[in-house]
Length: 476
Ligand code: FAD
Ligand code: SF4
Image (cartoon, rainbow, N blue to C red; front, side, top):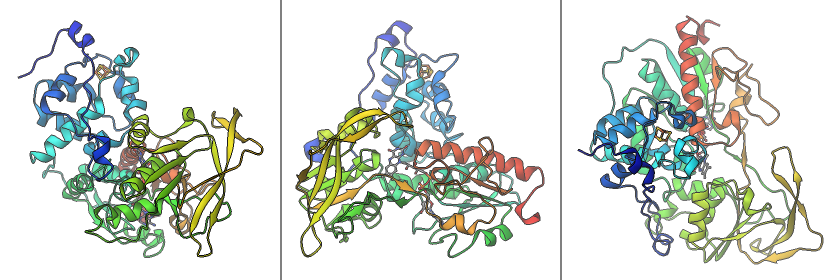
């Protein structure tokens, strides 16, 4: 068994890097880029943890994982206990271990971050979740006393899954309604295979289903069933339908054939298995030069997907500078390694096309940064007479998404703000309608997997408090 090591040695050790597929190879496949830690690497990294009495890392984890405890079990090579420790509060560890922005959360708060060497908490979490999956270790308990009380969850993304997992553990009868033919939300239709393999999401969703959660797909709440229908059948409702409606730039030429929203482009690639071409024939016409507009995670995913699907050149066009790029640093680094070409301080103003409505180029204007706006970021200002044509034949809009109003329209008494997001009580996540709760992107706007998980967990806690006090939607 491995041992705790001397404090001096812990401080001296460098963080263990993760092996990755070479850029020259990975641009030709959709396999995962980072390869994960080996057993030895995970133990070596875990031994660096100081096992702080006041573990600041935990303050940065919305899933409330007991970080030092699971790391200590890795050092002791008791991987099962490490897994069960994580699973107590996070039902999606292989997912969160891969896509959480740990550098902004637990690792940012890790005491070793002061020396620039935080513990690689996400990588260790991923190692343990993968070990459990590969070794058939699970945390499903058969002994939960089932209650008669029923909860409906609208949307099966990370917010819905986290809420469902926690409520099922408490014994509630949970039904998850999903509009698409597969559960998982953005985890299955948004984030590409090379960052989050679908089999991993399917496995963790399957584990949640095995705790008794019923998943009903192909149900668009607000169309096939209304919220009023659900109110008659369920004691409480959690709305977590995401913010999946695409936003466009609203510039001339945007209605041409080769202009996609990132949402549509990535959904086709993921759900219709474009990444398995030619085994699966999908209707994404990839052209030689693709421009993705925006610089968030969605933009990086789109530009890198276009490259893997056969674009010879893949550009990122962003109106601010590199310092303002919202994507995770690791994703930008991977994109650069793969040869994605960045055009910073550049704003598209018009899309050019031929007589058949096919894109032939994009007129852009150069920008400079002015004073900070309300988001604290410096506003980009156009530089006069700096227009130029970027020669591209395919465009992907990745400038953000917004609320789809379909659920809100059918939810009488549930108020939304001016952007169409549900208004909730910060503490309880209850909407303006008693017994109806909401969380994830449909409350926050496009955010992160872990903030959605945190919302789902918080909602579960307050749904339990609401139902335990004898209240129910059916009694209203
Ligand atoms: P979603 O994941 O959007 O799930 C909502 C679900 O509700 C969907 O399955 C939808 O089909 C369903 N639904 C919608 N309407 C209805 C209806 N009427 N009836 C029934 N079901 C309905 N975050 C990170 O932390 N790290 C990343 O690396 C990262 N990368 C991203 C990459 C992409 C391409 C995208 C799009 C997002 C990324 N995000 C990332 C953001 C993150 O995925 C979201 O913040 C998170 O998924 C929000 O979770 P959610 O449960 O609120 O909603
Ligand atoms: Fe370990 Fe860092 Fe957490 Fe301390 S703050 S317990 S060193 S992960």
